[in-house]
Image (cartoon, rainbow, N blue to C red; front, top):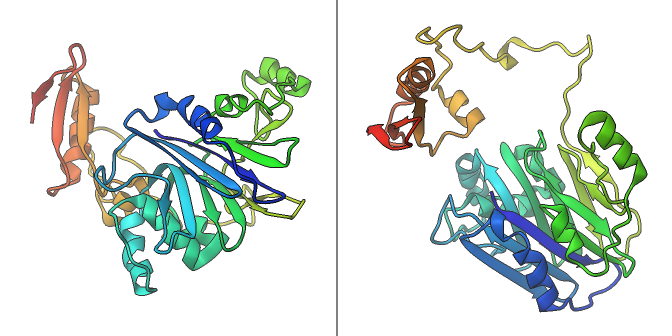
Length: 310
């Protein structure tokens, strides 16, 4: 889990105060206790709190392209990034890190807004393109990673992983949305795109938004959906084999290359947690199906949390 936030001037290229950007970033410290950074340039502020997982040494954010004109702040993981690297390298892009974050930057340069269709994973990210005077927001297909945004009275766009990042800005209005309150009592949550505040919105799952400086119209755009209709047959090659009916039942699809990419277990530490019963044996079974040096098999005692075997 990481935390992203930022400001984008929709009208001009004013300078944002560093202390304001730091305050917005630090309020999400719990999302990324390992590192934090703020990038400022005329018309934009990008903030990131990092929980280091992939490429700990060189994966700091915001992360830039070769000439520094494109920057990204990113929360999540791109499972198939190793497959996209050679494709982007063939197009002439140079990678300086081994981070999945850098794939997003170069994918934006290569494919623009359509880059999200190439990603498999859970993500919320913001890309600033200085040459296009554009801020691009995107959220994963299932909406695993959150992303809130608000347009302020001074013409600034404010975004963050959590609502508290928005409320840290003194220009954000905290007017309660009565329809959101009604939804909360009826459903137990506030459905997208609303939030509890009238002026803050959630980016919908499988949607993107493009903000261009000087343009007044902004729309959420869907890049993926599931059609539950009778005219939407599933081709044989698109079907997914069912999981094993019980522990120990052979499942030829588990551990296959397609299965690894779908679940993003290219780099994976497999663990089974339990007391020696079905849960632990089930986890161990899956571990055994994924062979190779990338797998570390560890059984953990449910009561004490200490490794039982390696």
